[in-house]
Image 1 (cartoon, rainbow, N blue to C red):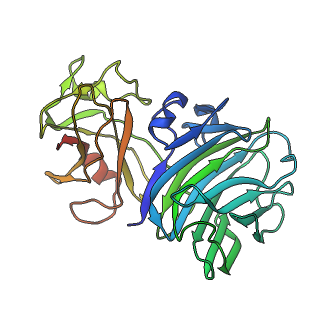
Image 2 (image 1 turned 45 degrees about the vertical axis):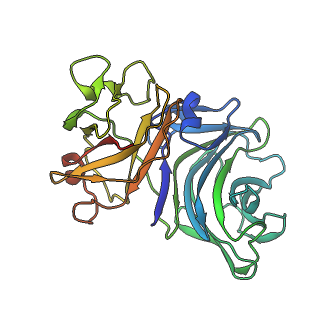
Image 3 (image 1 turned 90 degrees about the vertical axis):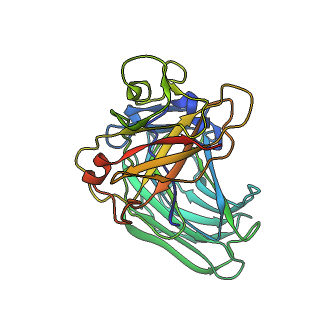
Length: 334
């Protein structure tokens, strides 16, 4: 396993953010194309009370990347702002990546011990930068590496990075000082490697695929019920209560650079009492490939997602041609 999760903030709005992230505190935050890096949507955080948490299976080592933009005043009002926090599965802080008034970055162990500092001016006010961090948890041989725009600014080894268990089970993104704004975009989590400055692009269905077992709520084509850039809930949708029903869809990507991996997001909910589970499906080269069956679908909408780093048909890298020939969707499996 390498890529664990990604988000570009493009396929939902601020009211739906808890359907993608595990814990949120958003206050006066916004998601809008005004705050994304490349014209797509981004997240605008406001003050200390802005935070997003993503939970994942316990890992000794975790890599992550985040596009970050600090707005407005050239001061952080005192600095020492924990932008990124690595937690264990009980949400105990293990390592914090903190921003300072002189635009340096400090690394703290979860108990507040300073582990290391960068030079000043490694990020800039009112400019996008791409921050990546690697953290390995250990009481004696812990590791912290931090890169900004592809340049390593911190490289710590033989550290005590353990403040809880032996693992990392969650990452929190935190807002800045009171009354200050920042923007986040193009976030990834990995357990094996850095990916460098990444752009996360979202593609919505634009054609019905090989399987169309679900029933559309309206219209002439199934994909028209699931093609909104931001999901519209029950305004239009496809539905089924039949085991082994599948619905899959085609996409158009246009020109792409190197594809590190894809994440299939199914936005779904249960509308009757009982138990249902779904399995994500990729159809490649006329063969359906099943992902991992989800946990039981809840009565409220949630994004169920799975990552494929390579084409399951040939285990080779994705390309524009492969993605536009493939189809994506889901099957009811329980």
